[in-house]
Amino acid sequence: MIDQIIQYAETWVPREIWIGMITFSFIAFVGTLIAIPAILIRLPPDYFDNHGHRKWFANHHPIIRTLGLMVKNGLGLIFLVAGIAMLVLPGQGILTMVLGILFLDFPGKHRVEQKLIRQPQILNAINSLRKKAGKLPFVFHEKSPT
Image (cartoon, rainbow, N blue to C red; front, side, top):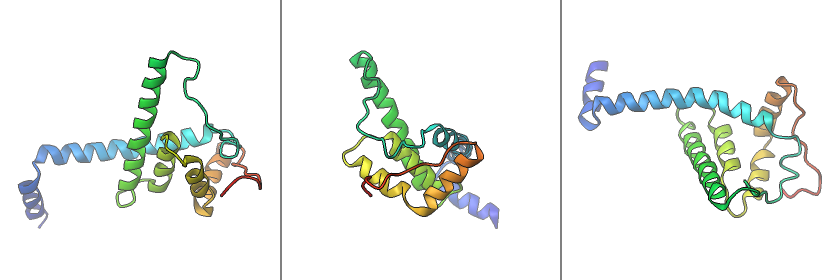
């Protein structure tokens, strides 16, 4: 039965591509298990409250700043797409999407971040992760928009 399914799948996509997709999926899964906690733990507790428009590489040459922004937004897009895929594949889909949004630059980003991070399930998951690492939970002041 499994052999028939594999043969049918190979009529649509060659075996090498299947192997590549499976390998990429495994690497992405393991990579997000390592990267997401590492990044979320390093953020300061007031990151979402004290989050005015920050300029990345502000004191660097404009070419370096542009390249840095391209890399940062590229990573954000990769994490966002991977998070969406992980909603149906193994992985931490929602946390990966949140991380992708943190990296991306777009109008209204702060409102989207606030709305996502204040979801009780997401906030509890992130704060429990931070607690295990000995970090303070994220804090919000009442003046912050939701």
